[in-house]
Length: 430
Image (tube, rainbow, N blue to C red; front, side, top):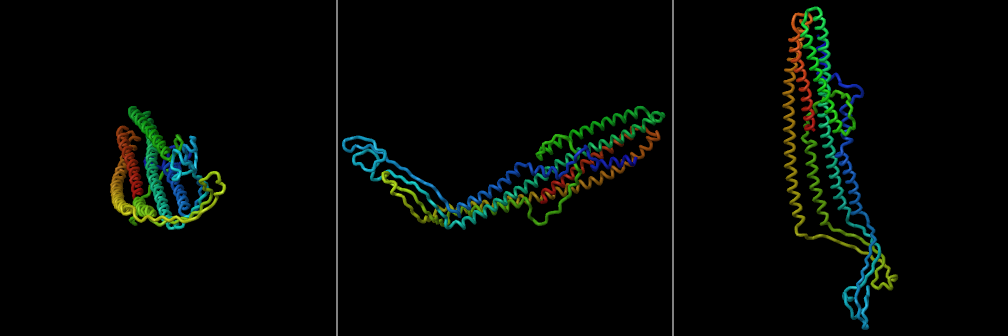
């Protein structure tokens, strides 16, 4: 009987793994989930896009620009000079005509290239460079948050699979106990020391246990498929899962956490966005050189090639106080960020306290269940000796065994629920 009790206890703590063949660990599913997550891939692409955008802004504020440009303008009229009416598509001289006043507008042809070099763009580039750095940090923080969320979700789903796997193994061990008792009672029936009905009761109990085993296997397959779907794994076969113990993370005593970091970055981004907006109020000085052809008389266009150079200067002095209103918007936004941060930290601390309280209750229940299981073991041991001696009916033994199995399942469920609470605690305590 001691061997049977050890077998039951061994099953409860998940040491017997369901299934054969390759065994997958929690890290296997973690890596697959992070590798196949479309959101994480999107964040990684955003980081690359931010680097490309920084290079574009560097070119805009620091590098020269070469453009090919041209204009072609014709002014058609209906001429009546000399008593003859004719259409001229690009006249330059006429006295009696219908059309635009040639003294105000005439045909024009321009074609050339323009080279422009910003002279005061270095300080502006430093501003956008800082904002780009903050944007990159925000995306990195999003990646850490999503990975952290995936770790929690995958761990919880993995624990559900382990519960089903352990319950199936537990049903196997119970079946072994019932088979052992059937053989014992069968010998007693042959010797006239037990009733045939006792043997049939054991057969019924074994059939009921087999149904529970199949139910656990079905639940295991369903939860395993959900785990594969969550991690982006294309596999529908049952595999064995390695047993795990979720360790409770050391309390975070430094005040800052992953969940409040995003608000610090949002605050920095608000300041950087305001500085970027204020770039339009900085003086802008550009050197330009252009060359090509400009002509109003198309007949001699080949004689009008040339070049010019100069400076363009722009400085916004007044724009209706737009800058002041933008600063007010930034102040309100900072206030909202502070409120969100305080609320997020409050909720995080409350979640941590709730998890610690639940863990304490689970520990108390575990102690009570252990005491109950120990008493069941004593009673079952006594009943087994009496059954083997043919002194009592097997009905009492089956009744106590059912209660013991129910308590064992409660212990399994309690252990899994405690692990889930630890996973939740670790999620918030980060």
